[in-house]
Length: 415
Image 1 (tube, rainbow, N blue to C red):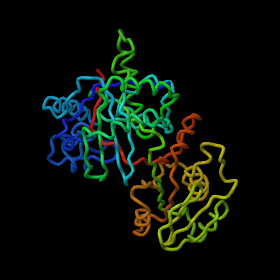
Image 2 (cartoon, helix red, strand yellow):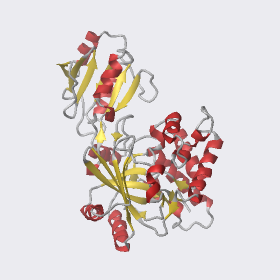
Image 3 (cartoon, one colour):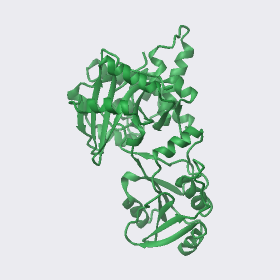
Image 4 (cartoon, one colour):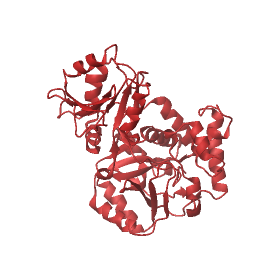
């Protein structure tokens, strides 16, 4: 069963939320954060990207930068830009993109659930990235940014969420960068709090959708604190970390596409001929062509779009990994034909999130930066859950969730 708890959120007063909120730390670089923060001293970037308070070129991993994060976090509280709620509560965070709204419950997720696999992952994490986020959690003694979970659809929770969604939200704004609407409600009613806790207890698993490194860091710091406390009882706040949990069916996963710098010594004609071994290849002309179904890919090469349909026998619908189009394309195109073995380290390939559209693939090939582009059909949330349930790990660069969670709407202190 999944154990969660309400918590006393630290968050901006309603009139300041649009000054404080920001994009998550890992979707922009230091100079983009510096530009977005501008002269806004209330921007959360001063806590999650505090290198912007140092001269240009200062490493985000400089020890002084972590110390500045904690200094700024305290400053935000001292000035009343962030205020802690008096009561342990749950919260609802809704995001609207392209007229579709998804509703998440903001909860304290249980550290031991992460350690024992009740909270399931589908990606590998890198220790250096974990350690960076662990330092950030340690120095602030808080989860400054939430992680993004999915849970199996639940009609009881859906009904409760809709009850709150019919009321006036605490926060309601359209973010300037992504143009998406973000809303936020507070659940302070004791009966509703108890109901949420009990419904989660009925769930065998929760699933990390986005934020594997933040999840690992938050859980590992919580586990550290358990060991360091000789009077540890199990009910301390550090036993939990902040997550926004969405019903699986509400989530939008966009395509995550590939662009390659060369054809591994082949001419365009040789490459197309080689593809015909494992794919039905059809020229679709000069108009942008998007894959219409699972196991179909779009190739852009020399100003033309092609449909590539994987032939029977090249994939295994009964294998949670073998059924994935990212696996098919990695094995049969990137590895077998282009000799790109490691997607994480090769400098011959790059990845383009689906929010940018297939026009971005076309642009990067047409301008000569890349030789060809490959568009994939999006992975489904059910596929992710199947892989997590099987204990397997997805191939790299497989999922692109959108919209991203905004940071700064709420923070969870560990004490």
